[in-house]
Length: 143
Image 1: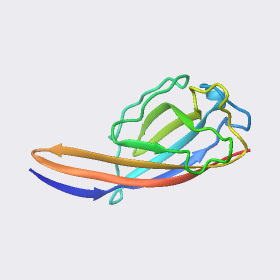
Image 2 (image 1 turned 60 degrees about the horizontal axis):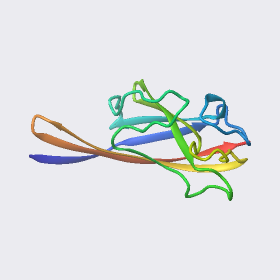
Image 3 (image 1 turned 90 degrees about the vertical axis):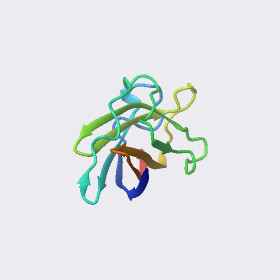
Image 4 (image 1 turned 60 degrees about the vertical axis):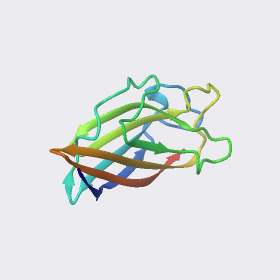
């Protein structure tokens, strides 16, 4: 079996949505939304995960998706918990985040939070494997 490696172009923007300084809890009113657009050679890639999460408790990202935070958080700032993953179709995905759900004291602080997203998956079709990978950085500003 042969394997081919292909690069994904991942574009990511973060909308603070309802997230404000002092906001906390696993609920929509404390959440921010990460929007992701995935293409390969200009073609929209829309089959990288199915919807999960209920906006009110922690959920996992699809296999091969990794959201990294905590490497550029202002002092005292919280890590985040994913509470929803949505495949919007057309290569667009949304990830809802809230301050770290397992720590009731975790709140959004005003300032900037930087996030990295990695997608690293392998598909096999008719005995041929294709390794797809890509990454993006984005900034969330909390007021």
